[in-house]
Length: 401
Ligand SMILES: [Zn+2]
Image (spheres, rainbow, N blue to C red):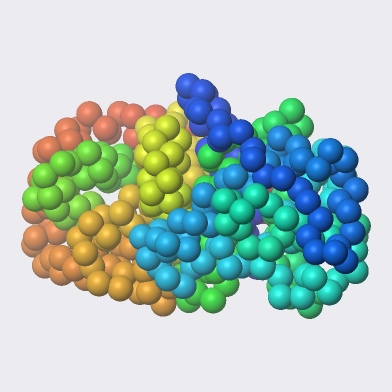
């Protein structure tokens, strides 16, 4: 059930990120909806709601965002992840909820949608350039869909595995509402998890967050690694960036040599969640969603907290570190790297193979990093974080874990 766990945890973390992003200054909202609802073809039934033939604001904004996102996947998929991840071609069902129940659904890219019972063909504004959309006032497979909390990759709709995403108004649930660009990044993030069903997972301990080592020595090295990652993210000169990346590899290798859990938890989590967070960055950058923190690494690498230490260091951190390491692999022009990730390599594996440092070079880079980032100033904070971690529950998932 490891894979399913990724989905659940990724959603929890997405909420955390969205909560964080909600604290940011207001972002510009998507453009006003231009999508019109019209019956398509002479045999199509009239759409029952909304009666005025216009999509309501939320549906309009949703299709606006899908339009922009799909266009980028159509034209720039190699710059988002690779040509094989095509969100714009996936069978996708968008289910409108009112907080108490599901109301209706739109189905896109389903091969048999037009022949399904109760399908209503929707004609959207041509400039949206979206695939044919069918609306269902009676939701297919409604009983099973009602049990879907927010999204599900493996729903079966008329025999076809379909990515189901629920959405609603901001008043009901801001985080499931297409009112900001973050929503489309969220859809793309979870969509990549769907595609990950066919990936080979890097060696894993089954996401054993409870057993993750959080003694002061380890937390100090995590803080050192974070400092080097930040330096590499901020470096404008490629040589300076490469120097910082070598430090990261040395610190990470040191941690792996000392604690098996680093190879078995950091690496597979970075492979799966880091890549999904990374495409929020690539997609958001291509779309010029410059003000969302998901597309700018603005919230990357929060300082080691003084509460919920395990939650942060054995789970949440890997989204940011994995996204950052993905970016570094890309910046180093390591060929076919996304395919290597899909084949079971982690981002760290690719960086380590690229630099292929000897033991003595790793030791020298580690020392260099300790000097550069003032390692001795990290030790007291690491010690207090370790004490906090020791006082907190090891089961960060509660009953669901
Ligand atoms: Zn995720």
